[in-house]
Structures are given as C-alpha cells and as structure tokens.
Length: 187
Image (tube, rainbow, N blue to C red):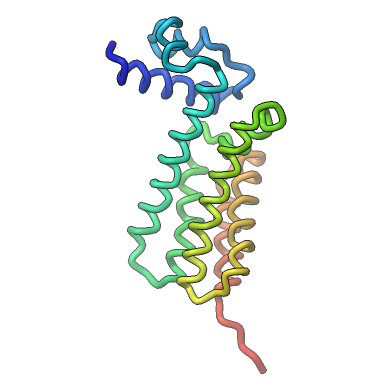
C-alpha cells in the first residue's frame, strides 16, 4: 500500500470510528485493524493520536464546507432562498445514517480543554461557517450583525438533532430563518 493510499485509508477509518464512538474510546490499534495500515506505518504518517485527530478534523472541515457550499450554489432561487438552503442541507445531513452531531463540537467536548490544537480547529471551523452564513445573509439584504441569529439557529439545530435523533430541528430552524428573512411591515 503506497503512502497516499495508506494515509487515506487511515484517515477514513479513524474518522468513521471517532465519529461513531468518540475519540477517547478508540485506540490506535482499532484504527490499524479497520484501515489495514500497519501500526508502524500509521505512526509514521501520524506521530500521535492527536495528530491523527487533527488531520481527521481538517479533512472533515474541507469536505463539510464544500458540501454545504455546493448545495447552496445549486440553489437557483433568490438570495433569501440561498440562506434557507443552508437549513435544507442540514436536514439532509441530519437524515444520514449514523448522524451523531457536529464532529467539531464532539471533539471539542472530549479534548478541547486538554488539546489546544483540537480546540483551535473547532474554533476555525465554526468561524468559517459563521463567515459563510454572514455572506449569505448580507447578500439577502440583511444587516451583517443579524447573521448571528441564523448561525445560532443552525448550530442549535445541529445539537438538537444529535440529541433528539431526528432531522426535524433543521426544518424548524429553517422556518424560523424564513420568518427572520420576511420583510416586516411598519404601520
């Protein structure tokens, strides 16, 4: 197995195991068995479990944000519809088998206090999401400072869906976002 394939196999196996069971519950030997990468090669690629966790989160961030952006970019509606497409995408994500919430929140909860690099990656992911949503909200004619409400609706939906085991919070958050986007009538 060449280096690139070994790295890819190790990342995929580790990410699946970490997301399904939690970082601290998974040992490097389990990742070795699931990936087919020898322990020696695994440690050559990732000198520590922390390095592997960081690499998994970085790969997930890239994939997650690209998936969201691609979904929103396919939206042919108004700028307001593009904001609402975020919640449609969340509903699709929440409906996937094995959904366990946000990997960044999960990893931060497990390791954030003990591993500053994991905390940094979680912060960067959340900041990138906030920036992305802010751009959509501003494009929809809303003030930049109102974007925090849309982000909190999404983040709350992520946590609530993980805890409740249903994708419904994405739809609820989407309906709330639609009310925020609706023009208000001044009398």
